[in-house]
Image (cartoon, rainbow, N blue to C red; front, side):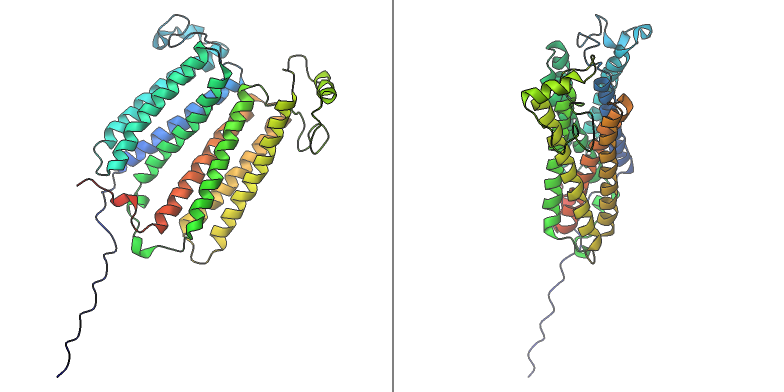
Length: 349
């Protein structure tokens, strides 16, 4: 008598129920991210044109309700500062509408993420206003740095609502070593630290503490003793703020960090390209990341060579923000490809 043949174990399902892709929501989230990037560019123009205190009151503009400020008075630095305020108000409305739209999403964590973003931008607006009212450059540093995090958050929402994120099959994952996610995240932390350092130099008027590049006052590492500082200040233009040992050291740390970031990104991109079976999307995005950081490095050099021309310095700020965003998105995609229980299936009951 033959023993009964055991039935083969049932194969686990390749995919769990996932939310439906919403084309409109995804495109609107992308539009909101683009509007925040535009706002960051305007903020860069404000700082680059030394227009941060062109409007001394807030939330009014020279006593007017800022939405009714006469357009004939939009001149000089007032144009940049007032435009920045109006665009910030518009971005706040756009992000609030995005939060309302996300409240109807089945993924609970995405609802909470949408709720937090308008609160974040309201805090950012108050911080910008206090920077004017209190005339504190340090608040400007926080204001500029937090804007980068806001851009990252909305860009992640755009990724989480994309067709790609919702359409990944966990049973068909390509080769994605787990260390890639951690390494990419570490580089992103380094990039954000670099952006904070750059914001510190901009708001402390130390962006041109050193006038030459790649050397620094003719040396690989400049001297920072009092006599050397006095010598540096004697050859600076009369309308330039005096440099200091701290400003020079900040500039040099910024340069070294830039080299480290470039090498790290190129090394990660090489790993993703040369690993057999690596995901095509990671290869493409890592190549774009490497190209973007190279552009950023060149823009940093051009900022020094052009004596911090406003358009060049603003482009440097914008590309720096994009470099951070691209790195964070790459980190999220790497995690998504290697995680069998992805966030796309975390839906409400």
